[in-house]
Length: 277
Image (cartoon, rainbow, N blue to C red; front, side, top):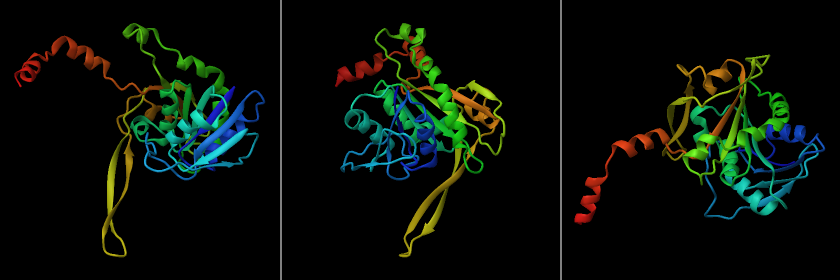
């Protein structure tokens, strides 16, 4: 199996190195890496369109076949590796291991999830993996879990019958979002469970500062609000000591609302207004 690894923490981030090193120990796995040359957390699904992308081949620990760093975003890295750098398409794309969880609404901002989503959008099987931390993250435990999870990953990329019934031409493209609890909070994993995305909204704080020239600038900080999360959400379950596995699709259509509006809402007045012009 050919696996492409990327991340948003940078090419030499401990989480990526731990994952690449562990997977490359298996002679049946060919490990390739393409990741940003610097920290790119919370870049979301951004792409570099107005300046060139620089690429440098680098050496990583373990038996990694090839590794490249780029000046681009996580999404750039996956897109570039699949279309240009790899001789053949990968069988699987893994993004991570991220330093810190990607739970609930984090998936909208996370560069880690965006790299996996880029692969999913191109119809490749993909996994995003993150390690919760209250101190140093336990990347080795997360890497070992991913290695053991690989034989089961294909089951998460099969289109469910309900999607096929919804639209015969619809191809569901999804990633698997995995979060591993912090070692400091949970010395033993309670188990592995499927989970839905929680909310995990943030209480934002913009700290106002002044540069040496007296001009104002703002520094975003704040904290996640994890109260009153559903007991079957990834936010709640990871905090209880469970590894969570969440299928995530990039098709963000609100199917329930769409079905309701199709039966209850009439665009006739709007159509008449357009025809009157």
